[in-house]
Length: 312
Image 1: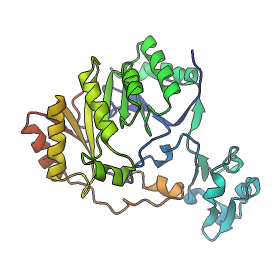
Image 2: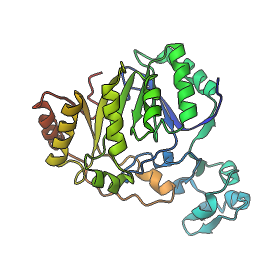
Image 3: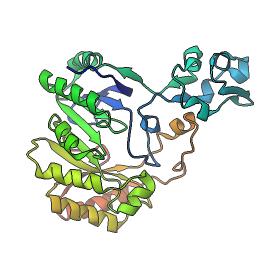
């Protein structure tokens, strides 16, 4: 069996909103989309990234210089608010001595590398606490690290572990169908039905995504998948976009969709990566607005779930 390592930036136990039952959710790094509202920007690259929490830093209060002295690239210096990081110099760093030297964990790396066997041991341990659940692979785009995820999926199938995925479906078509053959349940995101609007906020076209969804719907796959729209006010919540989503579902004979309202829980991660969060002041859709959208789907006989209220 292949033993190529995979980069994982989080593993959460006792998850109850990422598929049927109580589950373990594994967040894999790497994503071909770069959604400007993303809650997990640390998962964009298949690369460990340096994250800095100014609140934990002691450089300004206690004169700590551990990270400054440890940095072999001279990318860190003192400033009035703690430390300043030259991110361009950090990009090619491989040892990250600065994070290793920080006892306060003000500097940390986004994730670590796992062997398939190592991850399977964690799942075997967690399996004792699942209630009708299993493992959900999220991200990032969980299908981006192809060799690693396929090996883990095969091992899960052999072990009788229920598998779920939260995917953008922006994946090479043949591999997408191969990977899905080892998956029991899926949430598949549609950010916007219009190609230009989709590209504007995610950086990529939606054509591959829509094509893969159609192919999966027409295949002999025996699993269950629910389309999902991350509802962003002023971007994809218009009646025109919702109508196009309904038309697409009817065309592909899909029956279920989940409306996931925008939230700002990823705000602090953007600042920790030294990047600007464009959606900091974005408005969260109200319950009434989501219910009006839900009615449009329901009127056409489609099952529409709001937020975590999914019928598993």
